[in-house]
Structure formats: structure tokens, C-alpha cells
Length: 288
Image (cartoon, rainbow, N blue to C red):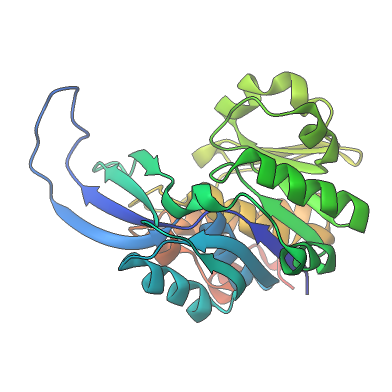
């Protein structure tokens, strides 16, 4: 079983469904509304846990009504929350609009995630004890760098999902072993990605591809009835991390299948499939 430390964000997603997304200045009537725990870090942690990994989460919630709910969703998933701290003010929030095709528009307000500015001895110990450190960019970049730097010293593999895409210090890129990006991020980050040993590019319904020391691997998309694409990329990344030790081909198969299944339900963390659900959808040769 892989051991994964996630240093990342946790949000409450405010999800509105509508026939189509509004144009600038336009008001539409929505079809439904739900509050679903999310955040790239939390989503990826839950996805990795449901894919079979042992997961410890390092992050921050606020001092509001959302905080206990966000903590509980990690606890219920079996994700370790000993390093989940509380910060003054609101928790992170994401406002999400999902249209009838399942495509979405998202605005994230950092809230307590912005308060994750330092990593203490217990946080760093969790990173050092892990096989993989999994990070994203919804928390301060200096914190991501500190985690990656410590992982490098401890011999922990660093997997970065550089989203939302932004300019990053060269020292961070030099510490990254695996990068997971979508097609748009791959274009924007082409130069720094050249320095990363293992690069995985997701292409939505078309699947994903890998390039690295073991050559190139592609996996086709998995056909499903799409309801909501929110969190599909996070589900992909968490599943990939959980099965990375099996090699790129097996990890890609797991990730593509899990990511596709996540689009068949509304919401982010609520839609992440279980290990049994993914195994039943995998080709027989790739089940284990």
C-alpha cells in the first residue's frame, strides 16, 4: 500500500446547476444547488485513499460553519487529519456553475488555505514518512516549495499538480519528480516541464498520456455518461499517485478510469469512486 502525504487545499464547493453558463452581465435561473466539500488537495487525498493508499493530509480549515463538515469528510474517507489545523476567519470556498453538458466554471476564494504558510515538525515528519508527496497550487507557493524541499532530502517522491497554472521558482521545478497537467497547462508550462522526469498530460474524454524514462504511454478515454466534470482531474491525480508504484501504464489505467467515473455524479469529493467501483470498470488484465 502506497503512503501519500498531501499538502494542499480544502474548500466548501457551492455548486449551482443550470442549463447553460451565463454570459457576462446575464442573469439566469438555476436548476439546483448543493454544498459539497472539495478543494484540490482534499479531493486528491480522498481519491488516493479510495484508490487504496494510506493518506495523511496537511492543510487548514477556518473557524466557521464549514470547518467541521470539511474535517468530517476527510475523517469519513479514512484520510489522516492529525495535521489539519484551524485558522481564524472563513474556510476556503469555491463557487461552481455546472451546465447541462457537465462543463463547469469555478471561482476559488482561498480563505484558510492562505494561512498555510508554515510547516511544523509534525507536518515535515508526515512528508518524510510518505512514499509520495502530493501538492497543488491552491495554497501559498512557498509552502509547496518547503514541502518539496523536505521531501527531496527525505527521499520522498514529489508529485506536483501545478494548478492553477502560474510561474513557479526554478527550485520547485527541480524538486518535482512527477508533474500532472491538463493539455492547456502543458502548453503554458512547456519549458519547465522539460526538466521534470515524469510528465502526465490529461486530455479529458480523450484519456491521458505519459512521457518519461520508461518511454511514452497513452491510455484512451473511458466512455461514461457525464453529469459533472468538477473534481475529475483531482480524482485522476489521486488515483495515479496511489498506483504509481505499479508503473506508468497501470497507474494511467487506474487514473483514467477513476477520473471518468467521477464525472458521472454531481460534485467533487462526493463523486470520487471507490476502489471496488474502479476495479469493476478496469480491463481484467489491469485489476489487482
